[in-house]
Image (tube, rainbow over the protein chains, first blue to last red):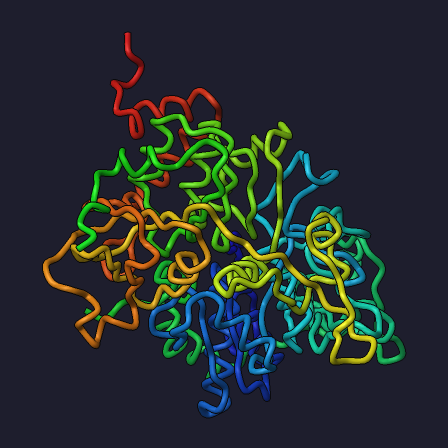
Length: 261
Length: 275
């Protein structure tokens, strides 16, 4: 769900929007994937997957749910889940109304279940795909103490499982409007990887309800690199054109895509 | 042959008794909105609604109109038009028995149903609060493995699958194309009641290009012609969702009074605010 009203971020090669920075960075996280699947209402992850496909020279397959042209499923809604269970999907995106420091995600609501004062849509495929897809990228554009909590009110899907639970998948990274974390499955915690230009470590701490690892000994936490000029041109050209199929409004308003007459 | 299964929409709705377990497909799959409106008009009560695997406008309307006792779903949403308002109110009021699920769990339960099996095992789920709140789900040790716990989900066998097909024939065969979840629903349910955009001459099963997308009449026990029967939602291969109407619904249904006005106008067909 895209609600970000982002101003331009100054970069060496000019200016780029937060969305473009995220698309570029997420594409980096998808490097080497054979098959990336993207759920509904996900224009930024969808664009990132298409960029990863382009950068792979077409080796990465992309399936965008809800699109007629960017997926090839013929077995109905169950097919993506069957593919995931067979190990045929390497990366997927999930979000959460709440995400906690152990990687647990909550898509159900706030308060005591079932009579919750705030009820969200529901867990969709998360209680399955989170276990089975090796690189699940958590994506949330509102980074606040409301969304990044110490402990979720309801576990739609847990970040980690007992050793004997069949679990090839799980959280790989968490990317927000402020920063990028990776998830360390051994210590079951997030590690701050980079902070987006214009934001600070203090700001990340102030807006995060859980503890996380901060790399030490190498100076300050690095800034998330902005896409270079050629990558930006690619995002605003070829990628915008491709993502306009499922997300015409996003392609036009965010990436400046103008539909061919 | 079975021409007597072809009736009108209100007569279809009359066949669904109070307390029935019904299956409805997700918003994009061909939701029988005309039939849902007819159910609300006949004031059906105590339904157990199985969302395949999620719900939208139809489910929100049924909940708001007081037709639903149990809701089995992986999510209820109006998609880009926002949260489902009647669903949210019912959750806060505690007036629904909620069976929260995850999409593949609904499919797995229906697959057990279509195979006549008692249950289906499924990966994932373990350690989630979804599983913690589903007393009807069990965890067993994989009998072919070694210390490999796996969830088992009971078969979902709806009393009725309700659907809207883009085309039907006079024999009661329904064309649903590649919307395979609708085929699955029909297989799993005891009975299928359908509406169709149009009922054509001939036999859909004789067209090789269509045959794989046909629900054969062996599953179908009632059919009504309803052109535009999924509106204001869309139907694959036909029309698309009416965004203006969904925006209006999301706006009106924000409180109970507005929801009631919506029902009056668009379900009961009464004049708005009758004076």
